[in-house]
Image (cartoon, rainbow, N blue to C red; front, side, top):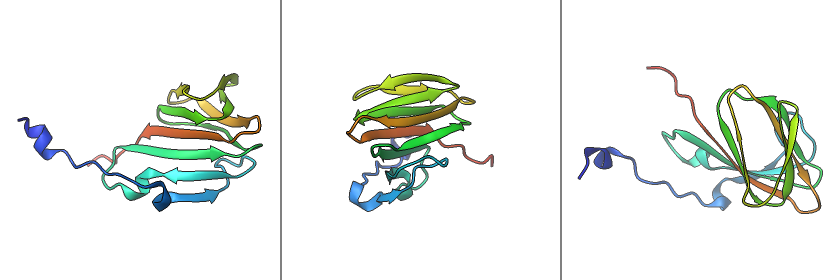
Length: 126
């Protein structure tokens, strides 16, 4: 048995009901979204996972990112913006953005855009 397995923290399972809340999308965009911030309940994490539901007409405004980021589409349709270029995304698709990109996403159509957004967390140097 590997020593790494013995030292690894146990998995943390988070129920959506424990962390869901309605809030405006970040970065000054329009509409409302549902935030599901898994990491609020996970100590010593290395990744951030957020579920965002963008209701019709909602968007996360374009903003610079300082880390790689993935937007995975669970349902609905949207349009991602990366440094002025747009691409449509739908269920089962993912958009991978690189550190330094200026990114955003907006909901399209009548069905809410349901996303999981993930990125690595930066930890302060010891």
